[in-house]
View: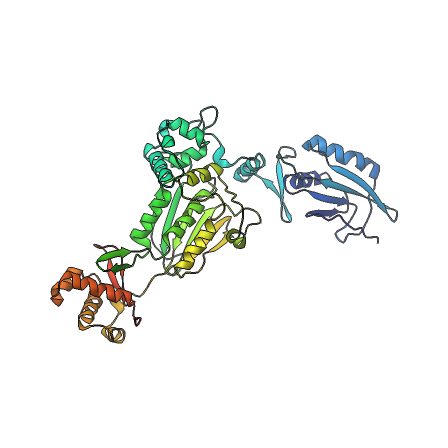
Length: 459
């Protein structure tokens, strides 16, 4: 049986005969990247021929233009006495429907788009994003002036908002940020960024944090952060510092230093990405804190063709929500040049931690990064262990360490009273113990505890 040589094309389909059901396929290809379809050819590229070719050459283009309003190239070919038809479908820059339904070719499957997926598709085809849609019921009175003031202060401090912009009327500011349309209607982005109660309009404007033990079933405790998204990252970081992540305490002289166990600026960049690129027609952002790592997941996958390698290399910024991204840029939270993951990598490298992993997962994006913490409880440290790790410590430092082993919540005042030395000397000993890697401080001054790591570094 004669074989044909198909045209080079990203999508090529072979059908032995013509059926009107293939009009939906043509719709799907037009909505995607286009394609070439051959009729009268099997999957092995063997020409089987068609009957009623003259009628099909008239019916196929007429049915396509009548049902979908698009024009395609329909070509008749003949080889070894067998005739077959070639239909060339170009990608359309506007949404195409077939009998009121929208189809889209994704990979090897033809999908009918519905609900949020259809909305996102139509907006994308029209060059708009979901956050650009106006809300008919909301007014400027629904916005939180404190949130707007926060945005203006941050933008001014970061040199991206002028003093004149800080003092202009709110409506004019919203116009300049493209957060209000020509009819004075607030866009979705304005409500997400600054509304007093954005959950009134969008149920998924939440950031849920859970602390897990051995597996997904072992949920130890959880919190939900709600409210406007311009201040959401601050609220999440404050909560992580208070309950979920460790802030080891060190001293330089008499200066007390508390530093988060993961690089804070890189952490904020991860949070900004999850907030900005989230599909707000989906579910809330979720953070799972484990003993050794943290997962952050937001609805909405990476742009087509983007991988971790793409994100770490030079690439264009393609935000899902353009107006939200612009506001975060004006506030000084992000760059507009696709440098976010480069900054994340540099932050984790400087902290001695591996680069976070980024992947499409369950319809969204999951970012996983390692923790730099100590999970050995000081209450399980015996005096025999202490003897092994304190060979080069002073007698007073050994006494301090024994006090910590007996009571991880012991205060520096109690240490001073028991050893009979002034507070300044105790602080110097604590600083030395921390520099040698013997102990760390978990938690704050009032509610924290000391943790014995179990080893020293010879200085």
